[in-house]
Image (cartoon, rainbow, N blue to C red; front, side, top):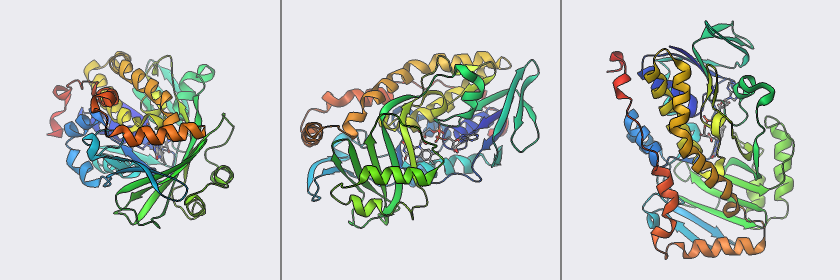
Length: 400
Ligand SMILES: Cc1cc2nc3c(=O)[nH]c(=O)nc-3n(C[C@H](O)[C@H](O)[C@H](O)COP(=O)(O)OP(=O)(O)OC[C@H]3O[C@@H](n4cnc5c(N)ncnc54)[C@H](O)[C@@H]3O)c2cc1C
């Protein structure tokens, strides 16, 4: 089976990892000139930890995780109003013990697959023609090629999704907020910790990274949808500066560092909800197929599990690739639907819109550790609910 995967972040390289195990010939195409760095700490939760264990990468990922002991909401003077510690929730609560920089996780899967898959950087798919002999792919730069299956692992603004669905592609579902991240100095000397400060409709925070030598600063703000080009970094920085104007706490100091940051990231909190995850022999995985938004805290988790199931179902279906794509969707969709519902409702906690909302969020957080864990166990149950199918019988002899 010859497979082209567009996108080399989390879903793409992890899909390449499993497909190579099942003996497929894989090409990964990434529009950026090299593997993209940057991104906030992302959580690997529930069933995705099982995927890492099956991949034999649990220890590698654990060693690359950023130590994180918890989170405090602070007032404008920096006084801690509420604290949620990882230990209070057994490592698997609103703050977890498996937090890794998105770029580092991407790097781990890239390192694992660069000998078994071909990587093409700095190019994009220009056209797809699905016919009886396979999917004919034209590229913006490289010469055309034919693949059995093409998978879009190219994120929220997926180009493969637009090509596959054409004018029928449903619009993104905006969740009413925007989110940005950039690396900054740890000028408060925080240790393995996150502090966040909220005013109605806007939250800024800092989360220690790189052994406490720096922080990942973040800002979210609520807003109706507005048009922007997410590749136009300078105008996005101007939007962020305007939204942060007049905020208390350490916000001025953090925002003035966005120009020096090597990894400024900005995107809308939106979801992808599609009538189906494939059209013919063209399929989608990760954010491209079912982005739940960073507000769900599960984007990376469902990308890792999705790649595992997609590769397994394609291997199981043999030459009937469309049956494999359909089985992947059937197997995974009920769980993804649940996570998307959760993500759609979660934005208010991160960025309450009123002063009363900020007060309530801080006080519920303050009391949360004193309440029975069972009251909040729903999210943990949801993260673990998907039972990983076993595809080990399809692994090719060369991988052992
Ligand atoms: C730079 C960056 C920073 C991020 N930071 C955060 C964060 O801080 N917090 C968070 O929760 N989530 C973040 N995300 C999103 C997070 O990675 C995803 O929610 C999750 O891990 C699922 O990943 P994915 O591989 O499906 O999609 P993504 O991580 O979005 O990756 C998509 C990849 O496809 C590439 N691509 C896009 N279009 C094309 C195309 N036409 N052809 C070829 N390649 C293409 C992109 O360059 C990117 O490498 C970030 C994503 C990126 C790319």
